[in-house]
Length: 463
Ligand code: SAJ
Image 1 (cartoon, helix red, strand yellow):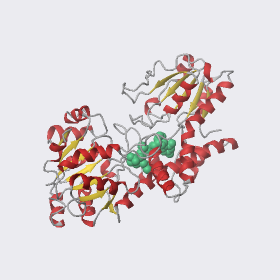
Image 2 (tube, rainbow, N blue to C red):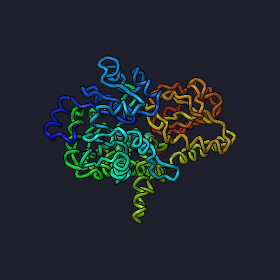
Image 3 (tube, protein in one colour):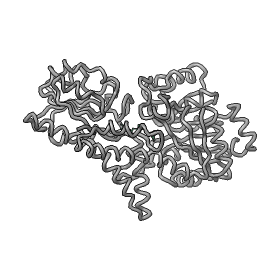
């Protein structure tokens, strides 16, 4: 088995793809990983608790950015199969990847119930020689803590019987088919798109052997680097830094977006000017809020840990506060504009464009739009939500088609900069609306053009 074999032999077998692997949790993070592992030749089993998801995978009917590769590995060469049965999934398996969600609980603490559930399901089937690799974002020290639970459950020891490593996911949620280059990254990446195989990774193991085995596996499908770190904790901390760095820098420009317009300055002009500096500046953009299961979550992991250490992490807390305030800032801009038309919010009808937390990505987790909806419901405001990118109907949010969302509306609240909103016929929309107010939360529209059409255009970060 991989971890107990001579390292050179294990590396050789990995390079020959003569190792069965299992990905536990084939959701947003796990399925792309399973797809790329199978695509380079590994026999892969995806283990999930959701039978519907398993069926979608086994019929390659999952709509996501790698559907074409999924069809190959599931239907053509049959190297990827999903199941809800842990015994079946771990049979003859030597490397296990754990990619289950680690959201926040209501007290903004890390919730590892999915991790513990996965651990309980697989522990009876763990055998000596297996290597476990965790990808889920976690607070520092969590992987080692969970490994102790596994040892108690299966009676085997990491670093003796089992290999253990942490290789944080760096999944870049991307739309189905790339319509526009990753604007954020254009400076350094020249419009390159960051697919799973083009995103370098870091890995930290319980020992050098675990690190080397893990690095070798990822290197089979990652075209760029896989950096070895000194410990599991170093890898956990790296992931947190990456996302907290983004959260704090977005908070900075969100704060500037409340200040600069008071000087009659457009913050986007300023950011793009600063961006012309060839070093030491990475552009981030203000907007209607920070959503998704990553950026607004990972920062709280470290805030809670710092608190336990008696350290008051003021920058991180303030960043969370500022980014969480942006939907409210949108509403303030809206109320001010409506008042210019002798309208008060409670009597207005609002058209919200965008439920997804990010451009062109069908994902509504922790979307800033939910804060808007909560506030409007509290104020008993009549509103409609439109999002052409999001299809799920299960949610209690009724989506209105683009063709009907503007009728008798008093204002458009623009929350998500989907490409699907880029060819709106504003001349026609103005005729449908009662009060032509537009609040742009994503620097998406040309304000002068809208004003020339008789709209009252107001945007985050602009005077
Ligand atoms: N946002 C801004 N201004 C910006 C960039 C983003 O307001 O300049 C907002 C977005 O609109 C969105 C939120 O922040 O609501 C998060 O978007 P994102 O693109 O920053 O992040 P995610 O959650 O889609 O993916 C992030 C990425 N992390 C980093 O870029 C450091 C991704 O690489 C990670 O793999 C992912 O988190 C994760 O899984 O951790």
